[in-house]
Image (cartoon, rainbow, N blue to C red; front, side):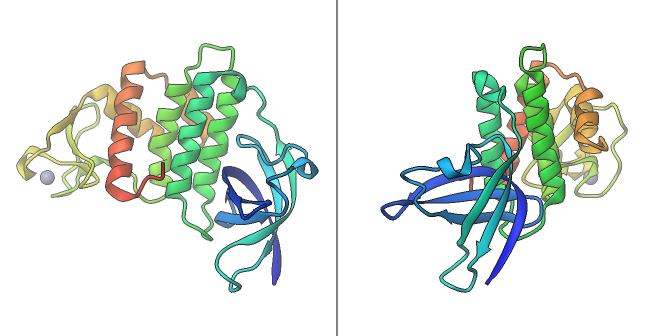
Length: 245
Ligand SMILES: [Zn+2]
């Protein structure tokens, strides 16, 4: 039996037996991890608010792998970073919930996912800081979603044709087939969907930014572009993973 510590985001909590909960976390070091919270159905007071979503928590998990599956036991959980403003804004809360749901489906169990971790926490920070400003939660979510796909290996190829590898000049509209993973040139048959220059440029900037704060600072996108990007992400996710409800 081993015990490990990790920075974590709570992505799901469900009843387990008569008195326990199973909490699922996304962590930087261990990817997705599920742990039993003893007595958690009655009270999680001893964790002092650390078992709410949106905040970064430091968890200590007693790892029981090999004894009936992947479930560990949560020993400690401490708030490391509180993001208290997100819950005061319904739109922000909705966007945060969507990102955490995607993370739950995309991030594999027991695999370090440091890029995805940086993307998710950077998104939640920006969301929290953006409350009460002009910053649109949906725009932040769109940028985050495009990056998150790349972080876990499902990034869309937006620079060249996925068929013949021919580069597509920057600043041009292009055909995109999410099932094939990126752009498809006309010589290779094109695709039903065509993305315009603004959408392609925004997605490329989101992919290329060196950090999450950079991704948000360099990028001001319209609500329409954000909507298209989110559609692309939904379609890509549907093509690759079973999205949990
Ligand atoms: Zn081609």
